[in-house]
Image (cartoon, rainbow over all chains, first blue to last red; front, top):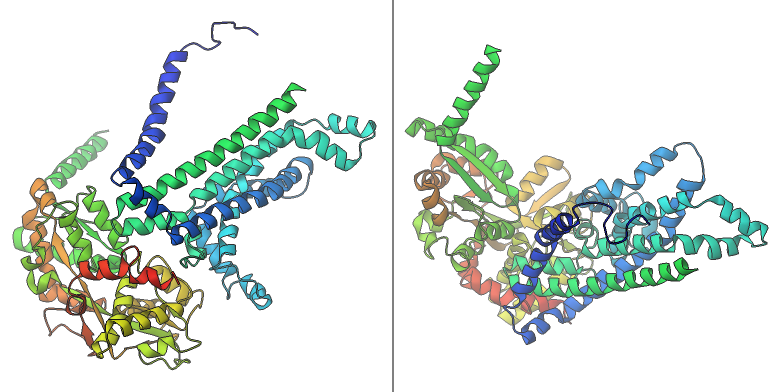
Length: 276
Length: 326
């Protein structure tokens, strides 16, 4: 502990001021504008817009599919990170670079290529279709697209933690008589749990807001495969700014609540393990 | 060194010249890119010969409603060229950018070209589709973009409705027909081009319902031998209106050029370029190639106005929404 009251770096006031201005300009003011725009509506109008059966169906799909995609990424992202950290094999660098591709690819490109592959006449679709599995133009397609765009988050948050995790701890666990499952669940998992949760929440948040890739693969049938961002676009196409922002506000509130919940969970788990 | 200096001077000179020359921005919809690639150079040459002024025309393309919204929100477009008068009316209603009587300021209600909604079927027409009734036969799937988000989709919906009422059916019958029709639509793409991709690349559906000019472009691009055009007995004529954005041109001082640019759409030369791109010219008969004569109606004729059609059919809770709420 080198500092008591004095900060290690000078210019705290300046950098905090900069951070606040920056966040305000880029995040807070635009979001405030969204809330402000909905004040054109009375509460009953607002409530009527955000609770029509068609809009309710989109919440279920958007949040349900995003959660499912984030869970899939949690499991397979961890697996991918594990393989990339623990094993040496030919082409590892290329595989490592591939993980970032969903970040860089324009989402429309992702949507179009996924649709092309999973359509009934596509490479994969033609084999799935005879078994009664329809991916493109169904809610399942939405999950596929959201899994794709969310993949890098879990891998990239867990990877550095795994790299820092010394194998001696595992060896110690083994020499103390722990079996492989115990080593994984009692030694490794608690250490990477906060990183996993971060990756999960990032992947989830990204999926909730996704529009570009989903729109091509979803089929966009009302009540079945429409996502909430499409509802917002639909309102805008009708020059209904207030209606569009009303739905946007609902999305914002739900997303914020869910992210807060995940952060609290993370804070709680890191405190629990950090205290030991 | 001196040569560098000379070229820098030259560039400075040219850029100052081009700053003085008039510059127009045309806010247009998605599928007019190819048309304006031909049309703009023709106008630039015409304007140069007529006035000696070198003019630059910039294009902005996107979904038509999105474009109209951008102009309302401040995109400094001198002219707006759309595929629905409703997307220009909005400039009066929301932004007060143009007067309400904008359609009377140019010939033919400011509509230089138009395109009817027709069918595209697969080679040999395996499902034997001849008219609107065939689209609701069991086992027939039609690809139509979402009328809530696409002008093209709105026209297709209104065409089907008008087909019934033009035959003497009442609105209950028409409503039943469009309800049945959209039960045969497996995918609702957000725009016309998306629907084309779904039909052509994904091989979904037996019929693509879209504009005639889109159909011809598609055939040109993907080969004439893969698809066939089917003309229904009666259909809607999608009119493509144009308007000068008064607030913008008065501020920029470009009214003269913008007005001439739009008038050029109605000239024999402009009409011929439209026809070349499979848009039916509305003024000069002479420049028409062999467009098939078909029976069409306009939105105004059957629905009164675009605003009425919007409110009854496509607003929230309107007839289109009710199709999916049962």
